[in-house]
Image (cartoon, rainbow, N blue to C red; front, side, top):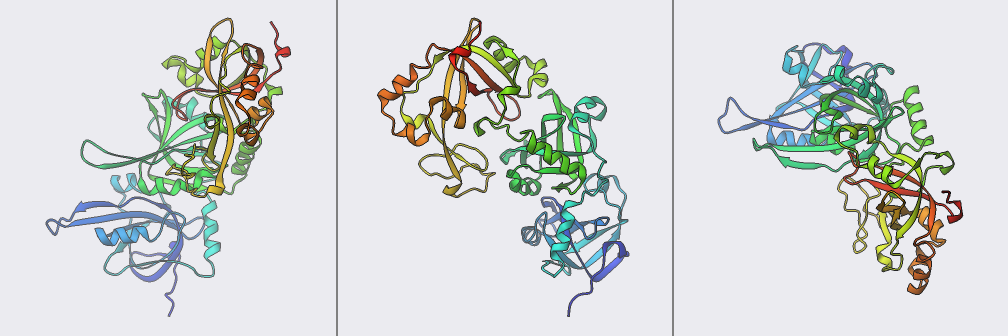
Length: 455
């Protein structure tokens, strides 16, 4: 006999034999404590938030032995539809700890789950797909958020505040684990967000459960509506950053006009093409600013006070001479295998992506391309490591990967001397060091004909 269902809005204080069916919209890593009643025994706690209508969601606290909570945690995750029965409904404590360590909900109650009597199972009923649609509804008003530009402009006023953010994911970092001085295992994962007003905003995740759930955010573009993110001014970076806390709830692909507009911006304006190894996605006809080599170097390596100003990529033109171009080195140095999903370099020997944050383990999802580094000089100075990749490299050399691999060394040498010590009108896009990368990179967008050179 099927258990009778009840909606969150109809709950009353006390034990409930009925079942709630809902979507898990937040879930946090389990914690363990010494049991006050039994010496030497550890007791575990896991918290999650469940939603059964666009308006109604409630926090759930699961208590039990380490083994029970560990198995329970492994049985579902953020985005799962579950059925919860035989639980206890409690009135919110309204204490500082409860407010600090749980998402804010409209419900006057919390649910307590016990190892002794509660049942929690994956739900596969006929309305499963309908419940899944709740994942696209933000839990706050559609326009109740700050743009990243707002946060940067009002940094000192917002420092330490909880705010809502809507932004796109530009980059997903790897999960890092370390042990604190107190012996506690710490998990950290950083994301880079962007919107129409800001190209790069760090978001830090400190929870293992949340950090693991973002593996699916490699596909672009991903728009997020984040509720209750803590923003603060970080002295080390000299900029505002955001942190996911125990109060944060994240909606992926929010179904709102504002989110649709932001997704269109990301696609139409190349906002996601921040990886220099992607190739040329910029229209050189729109680039007019002229730099000297010294000005490029200065802007890439500005002092600490300038880093926040110069942290964004910039494009321009430089008139310069190719001073170094080892085109006739062994071909393997210039043909690179990269993962199609995360764009990381892949070892030629294994052809397997080593990025633990990427789910790609298929050789079919690898791509090979030409990648060259050249040095340019002008009357101000010389600068190494200008990067020429993919379509730009093929257009410049007028050959593809297969042609280059079979090319005779003498042909490569002849081709090299067509460029060495010649002067070019170089269109570039420069990526300063910062959150996205440890070293600055200058990506060549087009190497103009020497006749384009103007004194």
